[in-house]
Structures are given as structure tokens and as C-alpha cells.
Amino acid sequence: MKRQKQLYEGKAKIIYSTDDPDLVIQYFKDDATAFDGLKKGTLVDKGVINNHVSTKIFQHLEENGVATHFVERLNDREMLVKSLEIIPVEVVFRNVAAGSLCKRLGIEEAKLLAPPIQEFFLKDDPLHDPMINESHIKTFEWATETEVAFLKTSGSKVNQLLTDFFKARGIRLVDFKLEYGRHKGEVLLGDEISPDGCRLWDWKTGEKMDKDRFRFDLGSVEEKYQEVYKLVCGDG
Ligand code: TMP
Image (tube, helix red, strand yellow):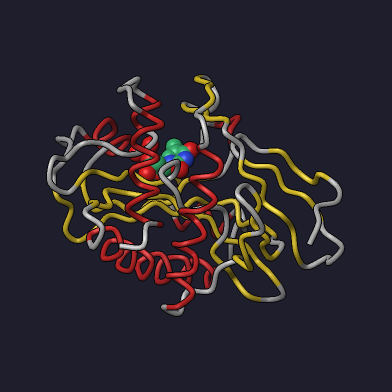
């Protein structure tokens, strides 16, 4: 499958059409942004790592009954996926307090969250992805009630599966963001699942292994992405 026309360029990926109208190619770039594009950089091989890590995770989710847009990884930087009409709602799950939750509510970082917290954000960069609730989603028709219910149950299942998946590899899944879209009457998990959109801490040392290293200039960004890659995609 070869890429044809560029349909969309995002901050970390480019979407290309293919000769099949139901399929598109996600091309993973090395560009990194944070704080709605305010901070920009390039991380060597980030695109390759995120493509491989996402592939492994989508395969694991599919094997466990989660329908995703993943079809196949074509090469180091390209993934063939089902074309989606993206639902403009980011679904966040939090198992451990970090990031905007701590800022917003004055919660101490690293506090265990039981049960996990689930939040919705509007996918809208100019508005800085504001937090929204089910009432906003319903009134503004960003998703139907049935879809919202699905996002919650599917997201919760993904959280359980990924928590166990990362734990088996010595990584604590602190929080993460999911995006879903519609494809032929079905809602599928889309986008990517990688250290860009997850907080991942070394289970033993608590060291951060995700994009927070880039966001807050913690150093060794590429090294930590490589470590995640090895732990997730290595044969062990
Ligand atoms: P937050 O603590 O900044 O709200 O982020 C929660 C999780 O969502 C974290 O794992 C990072 C991820 N995330 C994205 O993938 N994209 C975004 O634009 C933001 C703000 C967060």
C-alpha cells in the first residue's frame, strides 16, 4: 500500500490517502510539541519509536477485544489504519496524580488514584483543549449518548489492559489520552498510543520515561523513549 495525497498534517503525524478510500496512512514525524505548540523540538527517531510502540499496543488491544483503527505497520514510520471521522473528544484516564490534575486541584504528584479518574477534553488547539463534561458533549453534539457510554467503558477496559501490559514490563501507567473515531458505523480507537500521549514511570525508581522529559527539560529524552521502545517491543 502506497501513500497518495496528503490529507492532514498534525503536530506529530501526517495523514495520507491510499488507493483504498477506507484506509489511510499515518506517517510518524520526529517533531515534538508541548503546551499547544508553544514549545517545539525534534527528538531523534521519536517517530520510529512511536510507530513501533503503538503497533505493539494496538495489536495487544485487538487481541483482547478492543476494536482499533490499526491495520498493519508498513515500515519504520508508516502505519496503515482505517480512515476515521474523528470524535473531537480526548478521553483521559489517570491512575496516579500528575500533570494538569495536580495543577487544577492542588493534588500532590504521585498520589494513587483509586478508582482511576476519567476526564474528557475538547480536541481544539486554539482553545487549548479545554476540559468538558458529558453535558457539553451532548448539547454540542460532539458525540451521541451511546458513543459517550462506549468511550467510558472502552477507555476503562484499555486502562486495565495497558496498566497490566506496562506493569509486566516494569513501567507504571500513570495516565494517558485516547482518541476515538467513527468508521462504517463502528467506533474505533484511533490516533497512537506512545510515550507522547501517556505518562510512563519506571516502576522501581519512579523516573519519568515519557514526553514530560521534553515538556519540562528533564534531559535524556531520546534515551528514555528508546528504553520504553526496548521494554515494549523487545522480545523479552
Ligand atoms: P494532562 O495532565 O496535561 O491533562 O495530560 C493527561 C494525559 O494526556 C497525559 O498522559 C498526556 C496526555 N496528553 C496528550 O496526549 N495530549 C495533550 O494535548 C495533553 C494536554 C495531554
